[in-house]
Every structure is written in C-alpha cells, then in structure tokens.
Amino acid sequence: MKKILLLAIILNFTNELFAQKFKQSFVSTDIDNFWIAYDKIISTKDTIEQYKILKEFYIDKGTQGLKALVEVRNYTPKQFIDWITKYPKFWASLRPNTLKIKSLSSKINKNIQKLKKAYPDLKPATIYFSMGAFRTNGTIQNDKILVGSEMSLAGKNTDVSEFPAWRQNFYKTQNPIEELPLLCTHEYIHTQQKELVQNLLSMCLYEGVAEFVSCKVTNTPSASPAIAFGKTNEKMVVKKYVSDLFTTNNNYNWLWGENRNELKVRDLGYYIGYEICERYYNLSKDKSKAIKELIELDYTNEKEVERIVDMTKLLPKTLGELYNDYEKKRPTVIAVKPFENGTQNVKSGATKITITFSEPVLKQYSGIDFGELGQNYCPKIKLERVFSEDGKSWTFEADLKPNQRYQILISSNFRTQNGVRLKPYLLDFKTAD
Image 1 (cartoon, rainbow, N blue to C red):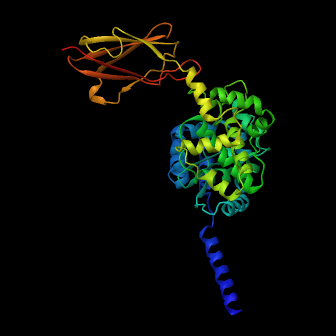
Image 2 (cartoon, helix red, strand yellow; image 1 turned 90 degrees about the horizontal axis):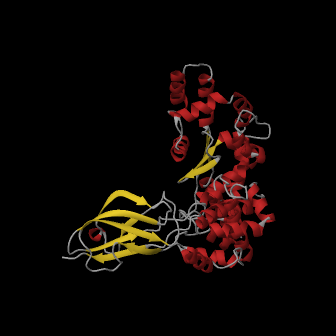
Image 3 (cartoon, rainbow, N blue to C red; image 1 turned 90 degrees about the vertical axis):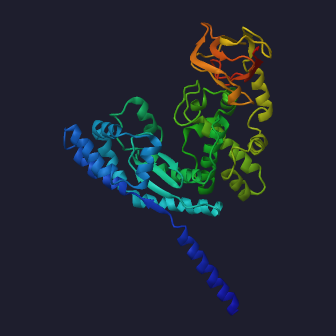
C-alpha cells in the first residue's frame, strides 16, 4: 500500500513539474508602450517629432515579438505614423479592449492546454501582443506567435468608419477579440509544422491543418467565413480549385486575404485544407495518430501528401490523375530557328535564336537555365530578349564559340494567360569547327 501511495505521489509531482515546464508565456508590454507613444504622437503636429517619439517610446523599447512582427511584415515607421494619425475614432474605441489582455490570456491558455493534451509532443512557443500596421492579425516567426493587436483585439463596438471600405470588411464580417483564443491556437500549430512548399496545395494544407486541428481540439467552430461558404458550396468551390491547382497566377485568390476570382470569398484555400484534414481525421481509426500526422506532415514528401489527399476523395480524381490532365494542357516549344534542336554543325558567332511556342504566352515571364551538363555548356546570352507581338515566339542572342557543345534550358517560367506553365525544353546542339 505504501508503495502505491509513493508511486501516486511521484506521478502527481511529475505531472506538476511537467505542467510548470509547459507554462504558457504571454508578453504584452508592447501594447503598454504603444499607448504611451500614441498619446505623445497625437499631441504634436511636428512630423519629425512624431517619428522620434515612435522610435524612442515604441520601436526601441519593443519586445522580440515586436521586432519579429516588423521584420515579418516589413513595417516601416511611416506606416505606423500614417495609421496612428489618420484614425482617431478607431484608436479611441479599440483602447479599452487592449486592457483585457490578462483576462484573455486565461482563455488562450486553456486552449493551449487542450492542444497539448491532443498533441503531447507540443513544443512551447511565446505569444506576443504587439501593435502592427494592419497587415496581420496573427502570424509566427520560429517559436514566436505574433499577434497584431490592432486587428485581433477589435470587437463589434470598434469604430471602423474612418477606414476605406476594403479595410472595414475584416472587422464587419468577424468579431476578432472573441476569436482570439482560437487564433492563437491556430498560430501555435504553425510553430509546430514543417516548412510548407510554395505551391497551392501545400499552402492550403498548411493552413487547413492549423485551422482544423485548433477547432477540433478546442471544440470551437471555425470563425472563418470561408469554411462555412465552402461547406455549403462544395462542388462549385472544388471545381474552381481544381482548375487553379497546378497553375501559377492564382495562389493568392485562395489564401491570405485576396479573392480575385469569381467566387468573391477570401481564403477559400483554408476551406480546402480544412475539409481534407477533417475527412482524413474522420476516416482514421487512430484519432491521436491522425492529429500527429497532420501537424507533422512533411510537405516535401509528395507520396505522403498524395496519400492523405487522395484518401479523402474531396477532389474528383487522384492528384496523379489531375496532374496528368494538367500536363496535357501545358504549352510546348514547337520550333527553333535558325537551326533545329540537335544540330551538330551550327555556325558560331553572335546568333539570334527564336523559340516558337504552341500557344501565346505572357510577355512578362521568361526563363533560361542551365542544362544537365551545367554552366560551362551554356553560352553567353545577352540580357535583351524580345517577344513577338502575338506572344507566340521569343528571341534572344547567344555568343556561340566554335567546336563547342551547348545546352540551353527553356524553363517553365514561361506561362499562358491563365497561369499554365510551359513544359521545359532542352536545346542541345554543337557548333562547327
């Protein structure tokens, strides 16, 4: 009996130590510093003095979180001063909310503990509350969660009447301060994830994992309008998504605030990723393992990404089949002048080479790269490169030496109006003696 009691005491003590070790860290001194700077800035019309105050009382006193936020979002002093001085009604109405950080921290901490329970391998991250210049309500840098409080602490009573219409939309369609605990959980998951690959599917999965897992473990519905819209318009959204999946001009129609396509709903890529994750979780027998797999997904592992996506059957075909369909649509190089590819006796000297495409391409994109033999087998090429008026051909000048084998890769950076990339084309030839 004594041994059992001793074991229970040890386990309890171990659990307490573990809880203390994972105690969540919140840093909000940037907000206090901001209001000191704000009051001083609006009390003077002297622009030089305003910049001096901003630097002395806010930027220079900033936490690691503020410094990271400025770096990640490329904020400039001018942007801070412009926003501070232009919208007095907004700042006056926001100020009371920024005094609620301590009470909000308790709710956020509860969410993080739930995340830790669902994902025991959770690594600690520090949450910083800073004032930014309206480019993010939340983002990360390594193990730092960076909350843009000028956006995330706004509520239904925040006065946004001074803002341009495009800026008001975020505040009117959502209730940021009520959504803050979920936002922080979402960003916390980002600090655990592997780096995404710069393609549309990877981007959507990256955000979808963070949104689904944060909602699931906290039992909180997503506040994103995109999730609700996608759920009720699945076929339409998926059809449009598939048409954009492998193209290059449309990533930001789906993510991070832009909605230039005809669906007119921002961040629908979050829905795509969320839906894939939700289906994968529901289909998995081991739910804890599914959460771990989603959070730790390696986006460079194409087979694993395909396995997860294909298993859910959200898309009308497998990723492999969809890619094959896309390949059939890609433009190709159909002719080379003044010699044919593979020619072994090309005349040396300054030579204008014209590449003809199977269909018109956009004139602002072009690309030449080295072939498989490397840089030494690529001729010197002049910077001036000219498209035909119709965009179906492209001419550049190369300095060809005698008795030399050359390789020039016409790269996939060329693309059509709807973003479909050119199939790379290797030009391989040899000059005469």
